[in-house]
Length: 433
Ligand code: DSN
Image (cartoon, rainbow, N blue to C red; front, side, top):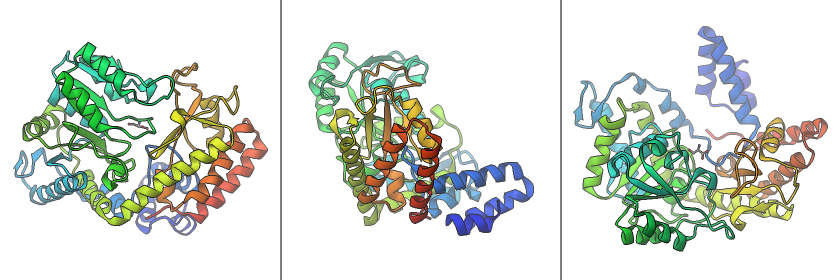
């Protein structure tokens, strides 16, 4: 695939096209697959709630010469020479993260959100301690206590659950569970929960039982940074996040807090506790993304993410789908497919939609009668489509496309027709760079 084709037809950044061209000369196998992935991203509708499209500066920093350096330790206290500029970059990233989330401390080294959670668990708990969290089947995250994960292996996990009627957090029930199990730590923050989290109420519960409150804001970090979702500060003792979802930065993690003692523990548990050398190219990209998120335009983007989610949600409800919890306050929604078609599964919908150029993930709904690899639901999110410049008008079109594909049960003619409509829509909203 030629780089001019990628640039002209896909609006690909010249540097990305040049990379493919360079690679094509010495590794055509990988170059061809990377080019195909560029085409896939440019010509499909990305509705996975945890994905986004980064800016060209963030993209470039990730693929830069900063990857060549070992910088174990922290600014001013490294185990390697030659870290002068890396110290300054990491300091900038830390300062911008603090400013963005209005807190006193940031560790920007975690390689991922799961790694940030390893450090947070190690900083706040000892192996065997009781941790109260929402299980993955109800919208939590695997690193919050799933048995095969480190969290479920080394800690005593007690579950709380959503209210079965409202499918929302039931703070009274969580408080009662906390009184019964006397946890060392309570976790709030989720992967598939579409409602506002009352961090102040969680802190009251934690205080009543003498527990630490941990907020994992991986999904909503961008909304929090933009001020369109309440902040976990000053309520949570420790906050973890990824940097690549609504925050629209490089793939990575972050730990935040206000308390100096906790900060000292977190630094030790990230390095040397659970990681070696930091990924300095990613830390530079984080710094760049944080600056973008501090710009007033990011608030406009984040509000549009929510407006788009609400528009998509309303359009789906109008077509007979049910939204878990009845709607959305953030960037995502959990769609119960059963009211539209009793035989429709999340797995079938995911496959048929992908064939039509619409990328989603199947997701269990609360008390889903079907197994996790089948499910009765889809999780849909609007951060990536909003980054392409789509608005509420396009969400009505997207709902129509989704519905037609799902009702046609994979019909080849309909799939081909929708694929064409998706391509036209994508061409009108090229990927940002
Ligand atoms: N796997 C991510 C998600 O899709 O929500 C969470 O880490």
